[in-house]
Image (cartoon, rainbow, N blue to C red; front, side, top):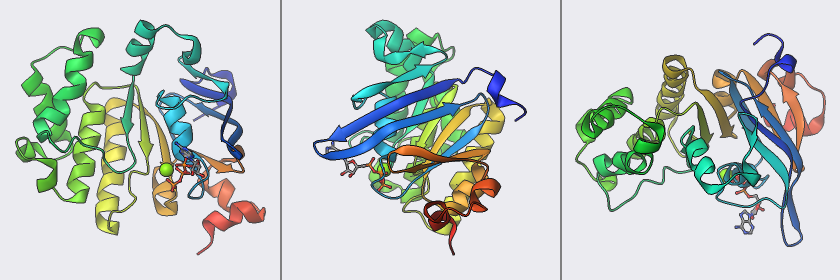
Length: 250
Ligand SMILES: Nc1ncnc2c1ncn2[C@@H]1O[C@H](COP(=O)(O)OP(=O)(O)OP(=O)(O)O)[C@@H](O)[C@H]1O
Ligand SMILES: [Mg+2]
C-alpha cells in the first residue's frame, strides 16, 4: 500500500465518543480508510463495533467526534449533500436485514428507486438488478422471498443490494458470523472479487480471525473504546500485549 501517511483517506473517523448512560462504549476512537484497501476492525462482542458503524452511516448520533467522507465532515453537512454522499457507501448490516415482505427483486430495487436519479446511474432497473444478482451467483432467486433462501444466500443477496449503486466504499458488519465455514469462505471470496472488480475501499467489522487473516490489508483493534492497536495481521499477531494476544490465541 506504499506510504499511506501522505495520502488523503477516503473515510476518516476522528475522536469518536459514544456513551449509553454510564456505559462509555467509544472513547475517542480514530480510523482512517484509504482508497482501495480492505481495513478490518476487530473487537470483542460488545466492544462497540456496530455502534461505530451505525454512527458512520447516520443510524446513531455520536456524542462527539468527527466523521469525514472524501474530506467532507458529514456531521455538519446539509441533508441533500449528505444523501448524495450516502450513495457512495454500501452497507452490509449485521445479519442480512433483507425486507421480509419483499421479493429478492424488490429488495434490490429499493436502493435504486431512492438513489438512481441522484447518482445518475444508467441502465434499466431490471438489468441492474440482474447484474447485481449475477455477481453473487443468485440470478435465479430474483422472484423468491427471503424466507425461501438459506442464511448464506440471504447474506449474498444483501451483498448484491449493498453493491447495486456501485459505491466507492463498502461497510461490512460481521459478514461471516453465523455461517458455516464453507459458506463463510464463499462470502470472503465474494468480498475479494468485489474489491477486485470495482476497486472499492472496504471497512470490515469482524471477530472472525480467519476472515481477518484472509481479507485484511490492514487492521485496527477496538479495545477499551479506542483504536488500541493498528497494523497488518502479521504485525498485530506478533505483539506481546496480552489484550492484543487474546484475539490471536488458538
Ligand atoms: N441503542 C442502544 N442503547 C443502549 N446501549 C446500546 C445500544 N446499542 C448498543 N449498546 C451498547 O453498546 C455496547 C456495544 O454494542 P455493539 O453492538 O456496538 O457491540 P459489538 O462490538 O458490535 O458486538 P458484537 O460483536 O456482539 O456485534 C454494548 O454494551 C451495548 O449494550
Ligand atoms: Mg455488532
